[in-house]
Every structure is written in structure tokens, then in C-alpha cells.
Length: 328
Ligand SMILES: [Zn+2]
Ligand SMILES: [Zn+2]
Image (tube, rainbow, N blue to C red; front, side, top):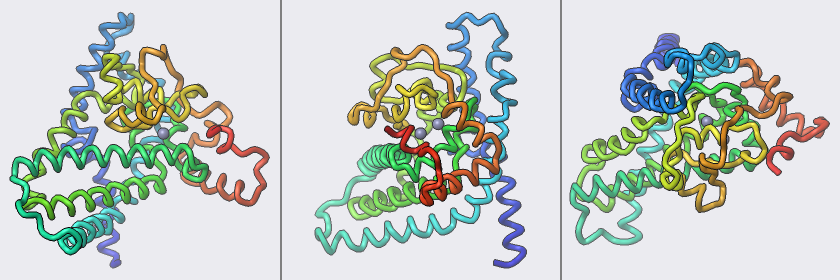
């Protein structure tokens, strides 16, 4: 890498967090921020708070907390990581889908009739969404259940205040795993549909894929990481994870550990017995316990401590095994 390329990478990384507000695929896009305000207002009105709406949404102890500054710092740190990783990921995804497209006819022969363009849009969108969501659930489940992975995922859970940026409070190791998973699923599903459809996937499917993600982003995905407890109707929470259900996932209380691990869909939690609905919970406190939170109150600690803890566990020098404790 030349010096110029490195410089361009750094500039790109600095621009990335700002671009999130205008990128329509980003949760922090202005439109989704506005829809979040609307939903927050609905919660505010129903609860009859004495403070003003502005004071309710922009609580100082949330947005200016030490925990929040760790979130902001990690977003910048991870941007550098992403810039240098995105290229290889994309190449791998393309490679995988082309390989599949070439392999499938050898195994199953050519389909007698390719899918129509409408069928391609609808099916590809649904299959991709479901496969992405299921794989996200599985990876998230493993993050909570496999002690070594929990060390890295703990960074996300160490937040004691949630704001929309907390979404991106992720250890770089988890970032790599999540991106690898997404690339793998995208490559696999796209490869299969290239084989089955008579139409170029990239052109016909963009619209469809955006309709579902638009709905998800519009209906309060930003409130998942916030202090605003937006609940859905009881029966809806069996199908879609509401913002408050994700807040329960962040709860400090033992009963709530390892629950609501789904991303968009709640059905995986329902199927695997990890679902908790809002009606069963009044309020939650976020974090992983007072003792442990002290180990995650700076950007550097969040980056380094997962490795330190793993090393300690492997060397057997830890007096207690925090992983075992939480994951009983
Ligand atoms: Zn989690
Ligand atoms: Zn979260």
C-alpha cells in the first residue's frame, strides 16, 4: 500500500461516520431519525411525563454519559477497520456467488424454466431477509453461549446507557465475524438465485431488498438502542422484535440474559425458547453488572480487555471465570 492509498483510506474512514446520516442503508439516515422522533413522541404522550419532549429524548445522562462517549469513540475506531476490510469482503462475496452459479448446473442440471423477474424480486428479497436474519440469530446466539466469543460481544453489552450509536459499539473482532457472515449469506443466496433466475439479480432485486429494510428502519430500529421503551402489540412481538424487546436483551438482570437475540424477526427466539415479550417486563437497567462495567468504561479498555480476559482464562490465572458465570 502506498502512502497516498493509506492517506485516502484514513480520509474515507473519517468521512464514514458522517456519511451514516445521508446513506439510505444506514439506520442513522435522517429520515429514520425523524421517524424515530415520531415514535418516541407516541411513547412520551402515552406515559404522561412532566418534562418536555425535548428533555425526555435528549437526556443528558444518556447522550453525554461516559458509556455514550465510548460508543462514539468505537464508531470512529471501527470506521478505520471497515475501510480496509470492505474490499476483500466484496471480492469474496462475488467470487462465492459466481462459483455457485457455475457449480449448481453441474450438480442439478439447468432449470427448465428460469424464474420470472417478479418472482425473482419477491423470492430473492424474502429468502435473503430470512437467511440473513436466521444467520444473525445463530451468530448472536453463539456470541452469548461460546465463552471466547462472549468476551468480544460483551463490549456491546457493557453499555450502561443506550443511544442509537450503541448499535455500532462492537469490538472489531465481532465486526469481522458479522461482515464475514453477511458476505457468506449474500454470496450463497445470490449464487442460487443467479442459477434459478433468467434475470440479472443485481438489477432487479435492489428495489425489493430495500422495501423490507426500509420498513424495519422506519419502524423504530433506532429506538432499540435508546431509553425509550417502544413496545409492539403482544402478538406482533412473537414475529418482530420491538425496540423494548432489544432493551430487555441489554438488561442487567439475570432472568433476561441470553434472551431476545433476534435481529428483525422474533420467530427464532420463539422457536428456540429465548423469547421474552414486553408485557412481562416493567423496566430494565442496562449493562453487565457493576463490577464488570468498570472494565469497559473507556475505548481502550473495550478494545484490549477481551484479549486480556481470554489470555487470563487460557493461562488459568483468573480467580473467577466471568464467562462461565454469565453463561450458566
Ligand atoms: Zn447480545
Ligand atoms: Zn444491542
